[in-house]
Image (tube, rainbow, N blue to C red; front, side, top):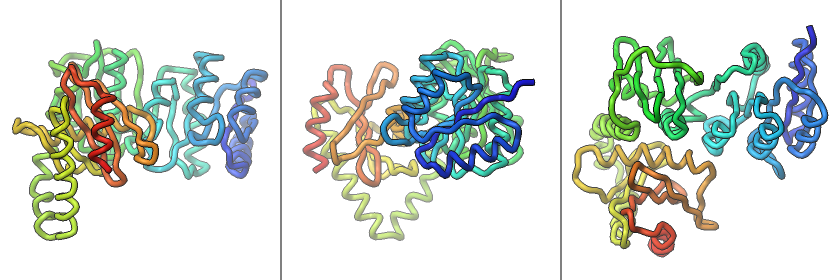
Length: 352
């Protein structure tokens, strides 16, 4: 049987050397490259069964390399190396066709197991990773937007949850004795867990009706209610936090006054709601918070006030303008006639 060929790409030569040695000892034929340009040249001239590439590299980064490889060979298998806890660009990597996400630093056992698993799948339509790198709201948004028919399995501490996608929505879910929407609400509380996304799998039945966005909104509302007492306790016992929250509250109020803005929520990077200017509908704070975090991942790049970046994300018939402060995200709901560019220009003044 011919040796399986693997191409390892990382801008750190020691990482390439180590990965090559580990995989060669396991019987694989391995080549290495320390930059994207060299890697794509190698890939186009030789036959590789798998590419393992770092996401962040100078020049041609992992995303550009992934896109170039998939353009050359749409069936190519590419695994992405990401830093621990970093969701930046992972959403775009999934949309471009990455088959697995591996967290750095990577130990030998995990590397070998992942390479064997990918190669043994024979190019099957399966994506694997951890919720630390790609959150459940992100996965839901992508699959529903792409109208995929798929099965998502999530495993954590001996439990396994299943979520089925079809026709642009979540149609069924199961976790232990819970099924339908209740299973999804429980899974939304998982901050980590290994996931496997298998394309082309039909749901055994339909237990969820309505839109995927409504499902996430209700799940966020329930999480928000569960955290309400803890948030109130923190505000009463930490004067510094109260002061910080007051600044955020003033900011939210100022942004709400901008023409075209119908609501504002300020969300810390850990998902907690710092301040908001929203209608009094139950659960609005948590509802928008989960979509703010999902949108941050969907935009696929960090937003910074240094160059003042912003982006918009569709929320059904509405849209949201997303910006980032050093310690939190700011999400602004816009009416249908509002110009995102004009609102962003006004918000820039308020944020300074």
